[in-house]
Image (cartoon, rainbow, N blue to C red):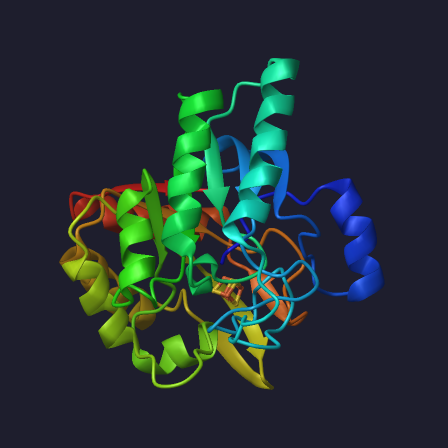
Length: 277
Ligand code: SF4
């Protein structure tokens, strides 16, 4: 999922441009280290194909471009392939004296769509213990796979989970996240509530035009509905942000930092930590 917290490598940008002039895809399974806005110095792990995005959302703000498929079968890297890349990168960081804060699963779409996601997390935790014991294994996810046993077990094993929550109402959810199939906001919020481990939320706010009509998930009534979900979920922390890189849909606009701070203040009034990025 959300690769938006990570910075693309120069190498990746050049090749990504040859593949798709809009999408900012990661062209390796492990990238960085990069200064993540939210997680410190982080190695990114992309357990999805390098040549295309795979997700069950099609968020208009996605920096990986528009979604082509939610079916990764046949094009996925093996656990061994990703682990070998990660080990090589960890060894390189160790040799160069780079102190890592995190190993972050994100990449070209939704990381929990990999059917061996749990095994990838376990392999990453073992490598972390060997090379960078101070680093946290984090996952940025759209929280749509919490009922899937392998994905759920992988998320439970990770140190940090950041669940996406971009909307307060079903109507806005269908526009800001453009889910595939029968996914609903109500089901996702229920699943996050039932997830029995510490959890953080990450929320993207923006406005502008999407699919030819105005969109604004920072409108007062939307924020009120979103706050009710936050109050119910009781996350350890909420991270709020707006557009930082080129979105899939060019007609979107950034929400000001002052507006994000005002929303963050409402979260804090609920007794929940909130930070604007
Ligand atoms: S969840 Fe949205 S932002 Fe994240 S990868 Fe999928 S489409 Fe992109």
